Image (tube, rainbow, N blue to C red; front, side, top):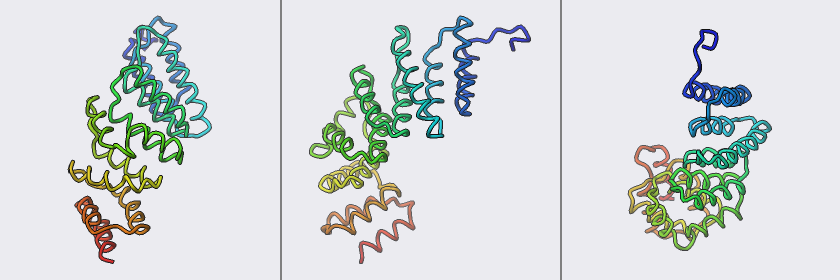
Length: 250
């Protein structure tokens, strides 16, 4: 393009950064980022989000940890730029990158900052952080998070909070919370969450169902709860459904 005498636009630079980022070629993506600034282009929100997404999606652990540090530095640079403020998508990118690299403490701190910035804490941010803390086997953080969002004692207030912020819980949220409770032994709250799922018309995902079967095997449950769980088995999961019904009849 340059050889043909055409000057790359901001859109062109952003497309190149995004393309290299999706291919995992972050060195080239960063070179384009630096070049565009040298050429007098001011990075916009799309630029930063594309570069951040590339950093945080890198799959190799050693490189990912290094790139995640670069991403945080880039994020701080973005925050310091008075003309550009991170949006909810920006936060979700970094939250997911931190959780994928087992940096749940940092993700939780960023989640706090998100709230302080008066951004809408959308459903994606909740799902990423709750799922990340469960996968990283951080029981203390998971329990603190569950307590903070009133899941253990007042789960309904969590849903009201989320709805009040314009992000009502969806099927993914319920199943992420259910898996987290099952993995962390929060047995007393599981029945309440299942009842809420039934009221909202949400089903149990296949990945949650296997954990739920283990939960049933390890505890004595009354008939009403067993029937409730039976209602939540997804109709499309016929094989898992048959296994579940067979388990109930034992």
